[in-house]
Amino acid sequence: MSTPSNANQALWLDPFRPLTVADRAQLVAAGVDAQPLSTLDELEAALMTTPAQMLVLGLGADMALYTDTLTLIQACGRSVAVVCRLERRQLELAVQALHAGACHVVAADDFSDAAWVLALEHAKQSTAPTAATAATEARAAVHISDTAVRSVVYVDPVSRNLLALAQRVAQAPVAVLVEGPTGSGKEVLARVLHESSNAANGPFIGLNCAALPEHMIEDMLFGHEKGAFTGAVKEHRGLFEQAQGGTLFLDEIGELPLTLQAKLLRVLQERSLVRLGGERAIALDVRVVAATNKNLREQIALREFREDLYFRLSTFKLRVPALAERSGDILPLVARLLARHVRGTQAWSVSEEAQRVLLSHRWPGNVRELENIIQRAMVLCPDNHIDVEHLMFDDAHAPFAMPEASAGMQDLPQASALQATVKHSEHHAIRAALEASRSREEAAQKLGISPRTLRYKLARLRDAAPGLAAHS
Image (cartoon, rainbow, N blue to C red; front, side, top):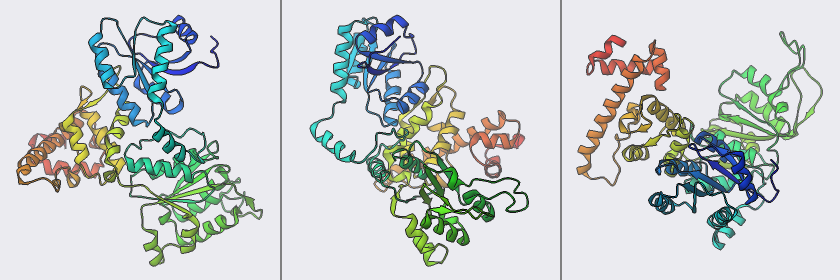
C-alpha cells in the first residue's frame, strides 16, 4: 500500500483491536499514515525513533492505559498529541479522557475522512507552541542539528537546561569534560553530545580508564603493529582509530596513570598517533569526551593529574547533577524503567505512598541506585502494582534516616512506623529471594546486592527471624 507524501505520521496504539489493511487504507485517504503498535514497549521504541506528533490510543474500558501511556510519553520527553478512540456508548470515559489531556476523541468504528481531518486539526492545535514558547524554542534550537537524539529522561528544569546546553556544545568540535557523581548518568550525557553532533552517524566508542591495568589501556587506546611484542601476531587498531569520524568517551579519566596522561596529551595536541611498534603517524578525526567523578583541580594540586591535559580536555565543562538535585526526573525514570517490562497487556503502576518514598530518598547512588531499587521491587511485586513494602533500600541509605528539615517532632512516630515497614519489606524480600533461588549467590543476584552484603543482612536478620537460618 503506497502512502501519499503529504500524509501525517501517527502512532496507533491499540492492544484490543488490530488495525486492518482496509482501516489503514481509509486513514491514508484521510491524510493519516498510521504505524500500528500493540504494547507500551513498542510505543517506547517508536517514540525514540519516529517524529510522529500524534498518538491514536484505543482506550478500551477504562483510563488505565491512557495514564500509563501519558507517563511513558513524559518519561521519553516527547510532545505528542493524544487522540483517544472509544465505543460510542462510552460518553463518561470520553469526558474523563478530555479532562485528562486528550486533544480529541473519535468513535472506535469511525474511519471517515471528516472524522480524521478534524482529529488532525485538533492534534496540530494541541502541539502548536504559543508565541513565547516558539521564541524560546527557536533560540534553544540555534546551531542544533536535526539528528534525532536518543530518548533520555531530562524532565526536571535543571536537566532540561543541561540537555539544551549539551546540544549546543555538541555542534562545536571541542573536547568536553563531563563532571558528576558516580551513577548520575555521565555516559548518557556523553551519548547526547555524540548524537546531537555532526558526527552522529559515526561510531561512539567508550573506555573506562579505571577498569584495566596500565599496559592494557595503552594498547586499547593506541593499538599496536604486528610483532610489536610477544603475542602480537597481528596488527590491532586502537580505540582512537575505531572511533574515527565519531566520538571517543573516556570514563573515569581521573584514574588514568600519569605516564599515559602524557601520551594522551600528545595525541590530542597533534591529532595523530603512532601505534606501538609502528613508525607511521595516523591522522585522527575524533571528538574526545572525558568524564570524572573526581575534582581534577584537587588532583592537579596533589600532582596526580596533569594540568596541561586538564585544559586540553576541558575546553567545555558540563556537570551532571546528583539525582537528589533533580527530583523531577525520579518518577519519569521509574516510569521508563517499568515500561520496559510490561507483563502481557498489564502495565506497571506505583502507589502514591511508594512515589512519596521514592521522592523523599536521598539517592546517594543516583540513577544506578534507583535502577536497583526498581528491579528489586519488580522481583517482589506479584501483581504489577508497586507499593512501599516492595521498595528495598540499603540500610545506610534508608529514606527515613533523615527526616525533612521542615518536619516537626509530630512526624517522628510516622517515620518510625515507615522505617519498620521498610525493615519488614527487606525481611520479606530476602526470604522470597532465598526460597526462589538455588543458592545464596543466585538470591543476591536477584536482589541486586553482592553475596557479601546478603551474608551481612542474613546475620542481622537471624535474631529477629529465626526462619531464615534454614536458608542461610
